[in-house]
Length: 113
Image (cartoon, rainbow, N blue to C red; front, side, top):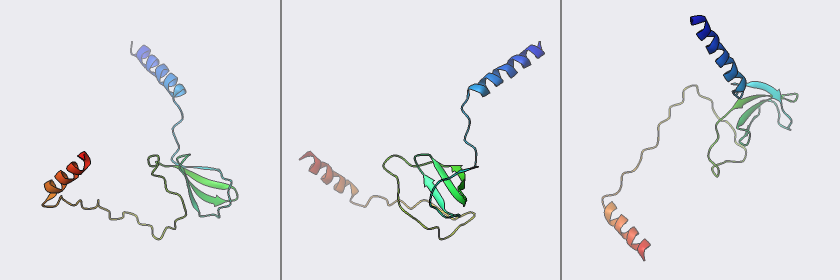
């Protein structure tokens, strides 16, 4: 009885594994065409990939998350430091001013007119 359950579970796992798309590898060495020098980091948001150029037409590709449409950044930037565990905290939110209700009421009145 247990043998048939194990066999059925194994068969189901094989079918599931065969039909699932391949998961992205943490990193892989791929061919890379471009005029970038070795050591350059290139982010291609359309591919959701970061490339670390090795030179000789090769690069290490890492999968990355990208921001929402309209929030893209383009250009060139230079990394000025690398830190293992950088200290970061969210910015402090400013609480509404003492006359917040009056300011809100004035804004609503302006919108109504």
